[in-house]
Image 1 (cartoon, rainbow, N blue to C red):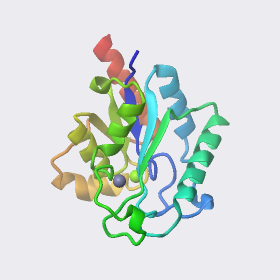
Image 2: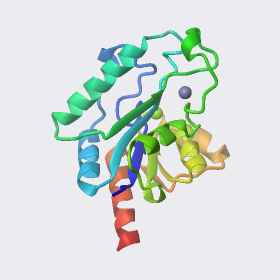
Image 3: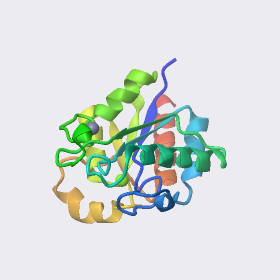
Length: 195
Ligand SMILES: [Mg+2]
Ligand SMILES: [Zn+2]
């Protein structure tokens, strides 16, 4: 049976915004993130990370580091009883220096390629799925995919709300203090719909 998904941005939403995560030591989980993912696990939503990692194309770090960071992320979460159901990322950029990844792709957000990859690999009910992230590009990806979105005020969120959001055509369905607040709002919204 297909289940709805929450597509979760990584940097600034799950872990502290520190620019490029070019070393394992720069990956620091934000407070209440494990609780948020646990709530998704219990609610029947698939929890799926979708992340731009253009540092790979730019030659700032190897793609292996991205996998190491994701192992660390799953590890830290599983120690707190939380599980991510999928992790998808875009290593590309048109102005990179690593030829293999220096391409124009459809998976760099706000493109919807990562969502499509997830949909192809997992059995997802897209009609009741959401996107949550700290940047307007996350909201724009949601719009292009026909999904509702939540902006979190962690990471770049406060600045995005103040300086970027007013000129964007996309508006989030909800603005959340953090991932847990956003997840709770999503779970409650669905309960009301199916009520
Ligand atoms: Mg982000
Ligand atoms: Zn890409």
